[in-house]
Length: 112
Length: 116
Image 1: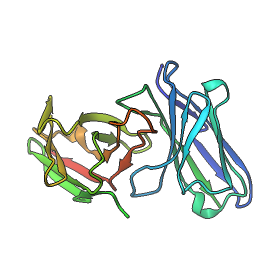
Image 2 (image 1 turned 90 degrees about the vertical axis):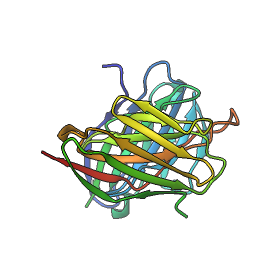
Image 3 (image 1 turned 180 degrees about the vertical axis):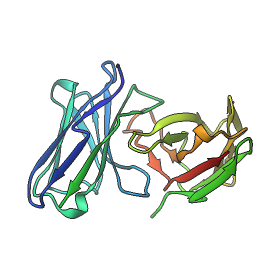
């Protein structure tokens, strides 16, 4: 399967714990995006990488969130001191310069 | 501020009928308008996309109609099938500058149910 993959698919954690998600984009795609989707809403942009550089961050990305894309390959999204409001589906997408963004299956986070 | 407004929130259509979903945008800098289909537990998948230099684009049973002056675009699904039952999202982004993230701004989604 050469699509975008995400791991884990589901994560249940207690409030205050740290969690980390991984995204593996389509191999030749230099652009990588993280979005967050809550129930009944469309995905909302969180952050964008071009190769290894994080070039744009949404105001939704609080100080508790950090993302990396070492060597311009896979990316990780870490949430520190999770809150119940962080419960959502976290989606990763990748693309070439213009055109279609291909989405992964998402990581469903539940904060108890 | 919701930059892309989508309606209706839900839609029930009989098999073989036409499903119509509408979106309106506010930012005139948007120049790429895709529609995504999402099944439960899956990520969104691109259905069809249009740029503002054309007023209509058709791919199979799916058609986008685009009205630049009204800042509106719509998705028509012809001969709707039960397998089309999913949530549909319109989106918009700015790609003309050649720079920037090309991040997508999504509508809130339309849950389509096609009944036999």
